[in-house]
Image (cartoon, rainbow, N blue to C red; front, side, top):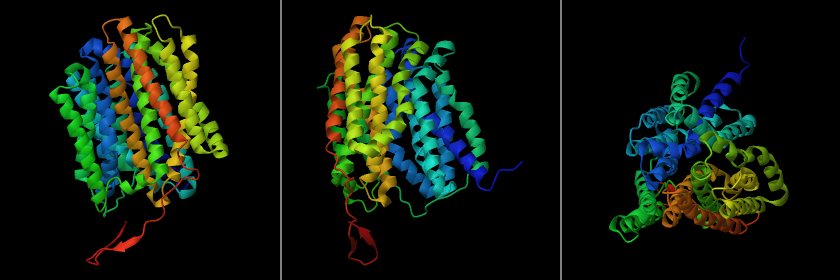
Length: 477
């Protein structure tokens, strides 16, 4: 029996890109419930645990747009395969890590692999799927990624408890090998030969964000006035400033800074940054608190987090309907309000004697908040720019989200270690409470900013075309 014309290529593209997307999304949260076991096995302090998560999210974020450009320049199938290979290799190395330094380094390389393969997922789908069916294809991809986020803490907790924390990384190896066999057989090659690589911009933004996150992670331990911490903050700020200046002057910038002149685009990206800052930082600490403070096993902790991480899969369709009726900015603001109230609920109640039924309303409310944010936020990003800029705008917003996650872990952990620590249950709660309040404040600020998004999108008008003085090329300004 043979497939109908066009069915087989579409199936294989969705199958291959779906597995790749699942692996990359899963590794955002799969490690969270394994952190106490990793710390017990490999040692290390709070900063080391932060870097096991942030090393992945940070490299993923800052190299995402560069990864897309690599695919355009050298071939999307070729670079997608290279990204899968690097991600798979790094996953194996993470599973074999014998110390925190090795694990953190492997996680950083995982992020590089994810940054190369993930931006090419949508491009590969667009090349293989007819225009009339792309909405369905993108919906399937989004559902797979949502499933990975929802089940990440549970999968990580179950593997850690019943086998070993090493298997949260080794799980990727057979999947990656399968993809490496299928990619050359089932995907077609495509490229955009005129694409240019923004290597200086990539180095500037990467160095700047690393300097700031390094300072936030090490501030309490080394002292905020110490040379490494002050140097990280100053150098990071200088490099990020240099990145903005360079991108403003670049002929083909990685991030067109003109987009941020639009109030809508700037506001929705600020909202995304604050949402992920509060959400990721809180999940990082709460996933440990469920085990270290409340005493639940990794599997029990993962199950108890499902109402929070899994709720978006149930509520997302309703969020889309609400957005169509009341406008995306109001639904996003309501989502961040729900998320902020949930974090405030946890901050008020969490201690060694809290029951799951007491935490459950916050878990459900937080999950509803996530659902009300995701779909309308994506639409707001698309509406804030011209259609020709939709791809780069989506890439920038995805990078901003990952950066927000890395900053959230660093900021909330800095608050945590300043007021408490891992030494005792009481010490953990003493640090957890103000950290959650900090996350609450960030998310609620995002809710306020969401209301500042102009109605109707607010995309900037089409830029004028001007001829360069040598008459050889026309550029948009």
